[in-house]
Length: 165
Image (cartoon, rainbow, N blue to C red; front, side, top):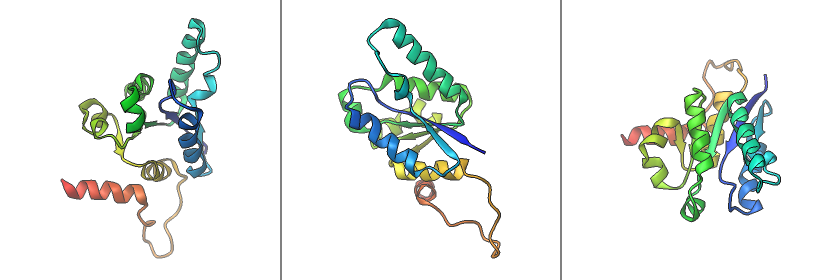
């Protein structure tokens, strides 16, 4: 069964590469049954007040309809301008009781009490995508050995965080 992941992240005052590159990489790394939903597809003619309202409504509808929200908050962009829209989308996901996965190399994001309690936190997209693939991947039977699949990058990061406590 197809699952969808809403790719929340900075858009305003970002270059096309900053907007699209990480989203394309995640989309390519997701399992076949996982579809990436980009909020950027609704961003045309965003200077008009009615267009801005339409963008917000579309993004909210997408967060309602998706199975999981992946939010990317890179420090380099956070230092230029906080991504208010992304934080909004994290809050929507939390209030809608959706799984939220937050990725940031910014310790301020990891240490913020609201973001810390809103979902799973990772420092790299690779670990987050691995975690999402496990969460949303299709069920498969255990191998003949009876052993579960090997740990992925996200599991290793999670295990290392747990062992530090």
